[in-house]
Length: 391
Picture 1 (cartoon, rainbow, N blue to C red):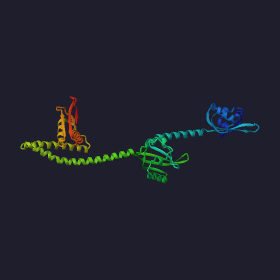
Picture 2 (cartoon, rainbow, N blue to C red):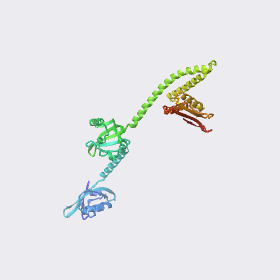
Picture 3 (cartoon, one colour):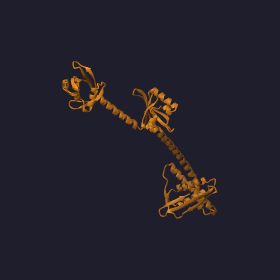
Picture 4 (cartoon, rainbow, N blue to C red):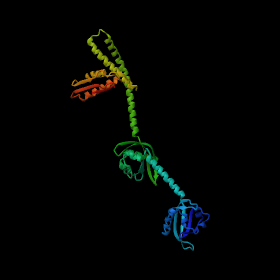
């Protein structure tokens, strides 16, 4: 529906039925003798006058005002013509563009929503022009993932950036040409720092402003690949634990008769005194080995070690005796072990292992040149069970 007006010096001469309907008048004759600005919102009077005085013929937007004072968007186009016996008059056509403006607003809101989702997407998204091969747009996640800024990426081809290997690129394009889309193609591509990113690609050919483009979504698999590697490592450790448990059981069966027969020999009063010291050493070593087996079994069955009140001094002394027999004679062990310290709640096997590991590491550090290992154990806050072990 298009309203038509004829005015002279800004005063209405004639109008059509559509004009009356558009602006809420009963008849077209009601416009006769009225100033044309009466149907225009006050804020648009100046622009209307400027067009009329300058005889401009280009269409322009303004705001119309109905008889009841309601405002609505309109598009105006006018020109000077010779009309009937009136001489030169201004012929004006007006269109109600409320629906158009509403659709524009809806489209704008839709574009804003898309742009927001595009930028806030947790997935990296890129838009590439098929004809030129240039990146048209990328979202924030894509920049974060690749290490490039949006300025560096826009209007640059993926070939220039050396994103993909030639083999992967051809595979990508071949599948896209065949089906028009890609659903989960795993590919590697290079970030700005040269690192490799493993991604699952989803792509589809779309039209943007009439130009065919490729919309690509990248799902970063790097984290999941690391997680998969950790899971495989965990499974290996579980297998090793199971194997260690089986070996530990067999080893325990070997140790049992050693411990048993050594205890019988020590209990036999006819055993020579000269042998007793050696037998005690055998029993202590076998007992410690048995404790170590228990620790391996605890590891393989994922159970916690047993904590009990123990005196640390005997364990440290025993560990140092064992260390003395296993390290070169060029390395001297000096110890300052405080006696009478209060008991602590710990696993004796783990304490023994800690001392062995520390001392072994120290001996390895000076294996060639020789040297001295100093071991100090003291209660640094008497009565509070706080100890200091230095190796």
